[in-house]
Amino acid sequence: MPVVHWFRRDLRLADNPALGAAVRAARDAGDEVVALYVLDPALWRTSGRPRLAYLAASLAALAESCDGRLVVRHGRAQEVVPAVAREVGAAEVHVTAATEPYGRQRDDAVVRALGDAALVPTGSPYAVGPGRLTTQAGEPFQVFTPFRRAWLDHGWAAPAPRPRAIPWAQVRSDPLPDAPATEARLPAAGEHAALRRWHAYLEDGLAGYASARDRPDLDATSVMSVPLKWGEIHPRTLLADLAALPRRAGGPSADDVTRFRSELVWREFHADVLWHHPGARTRSLRPVLPDDAWARGAAADAAFEAWCAGRTGYPLVDAGMRQLLATGWMHNRVRMVVASFLVKDLHVPWQRGAEHFLAHLVDGDVAQNQLNWQWVAGTGRDAAPYFRVFNPVTQGEKFDPDGDYVRRWVPELREVAGAAVHRPWDLGLTRPADYPERLVDHARERERALADLQRGKAERAAR
Ligand SMILES: Cc1cc2nc3c(=O)[nH]c(=O)nc-3n(C[C@H](O)[C@H](O)[C@H](O)COP(=O)(O)OP(=O)(O)OC[C@H]3O[C@@H](n4cnc5c(N)ncnc54)[C@H](O)[C@@H]3O)c2cc1C
Image (cartoon, rainbow, N blue to C red; front, side, top):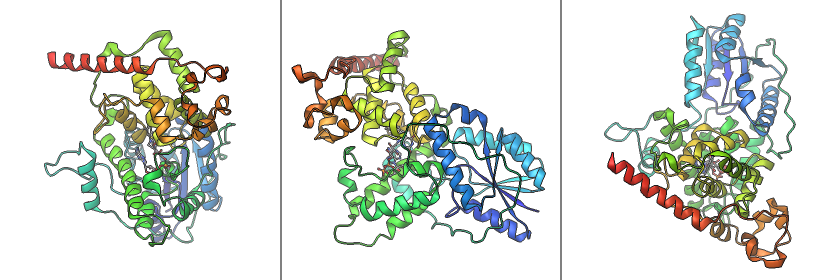
């Protein structure tokens, strides 16, 4: 009896305990492993081109790793998975557990549809499975620092060995999806590319991370969010490599390693919050503003469109939004600035910005995206307080001090030297005519955001 391994957010063979379990079960039965990937047309329709192009490339790489025997089928998982199990006569379908709301619901539906066959989950896309850690009172964590302490105390497993000579079954497959045309310059996809990028980063990029990670002009971060999102690499592998790093002169400091690991814990924290509060995908965990504070109508739509296109007249915001359109990725510091600008300067609800991000980000991930948006909007767990309004000009001057990042993404400003690029309105007659005027006045909108916050507080107190 063959065994099915259904790949989802684990597009790799190494350090994949669920695949290991499938291979062991198949060997015990003296049979083969069916490598299945289900392309749900609903997901395909709603994803942006950069994401689909990346997924197509990643599936092509996975198919090669599976000796060309990856079985791609189109359709809804609750129909396709039981159909494939019946077709090959499998009693077990192995998966890496889904932890986000859509995946959990889909898996419940698949379990019901599988009938006598079993869905066997092993592991998750996280070092410590979401929902596993609780406070001493048995409650979900609300605050990051105690979560990180508990996470460190709990520890995590060593990377699972890569199964050797997997007996892949030959089963009819639909063609691999074509990568849709996109102008975005995407990172190389697939498990091998992820490992190569990670090893190069350990060798050359991690040293100085603690001080340079906030500088979008320096390319100082790992861009591992992309392979982590698709499961081309597991955080366990990153954590094991970080722990085994030899100390060498000029290499990463203890601070660099601790800081990098701490960012990975944020990833785990957000997944844990979403596990306990699946509604956080669309709803603020802690509403802070009165309902009438949000901009609506044609003017709000036009402001949102200008933000999406990178034409707000604020250079750091525009550079970030154009980096997103051009590459499907954006630096974390700039994500915070553009998100704050949308919510607190343009008064557009975070959900709208989050949807735009999810359509375009190649690392777009419900837990990380929605909870980071809620962090910036002041509505999440352990979020930045709402009164912290990022100033897009001083953020630019601080984190892009010579203006290189802005000039890279905003060609209209390429001739403006140095930090002056962050204040084009001060350039007088030399101001590039094709760069947009400021859409709003930051100082005035900040006052409005803070006044709305006070009204929200008063309304809640009066209830
Ligand atoms: C509004 C907004 C939306 C975001 N949406 C996403 C998203 O959809 N998917 C996503 O993976 N990240 C998201 N992030 C978090 C963060 O911006 C990216 O993970 C980070 O920029 C990835 O770059 P990197 O891999 O070079 O990071 P590094 O600095 O190299 O960090 C290493 C790893 O730590 C994790 N990490 C770093 N920062 C964060 C963070 N703030 N929250 C959670 N994990 C983090 C990532 O897995 C990252 O790969 C968002 C942040 C904001 C402010």
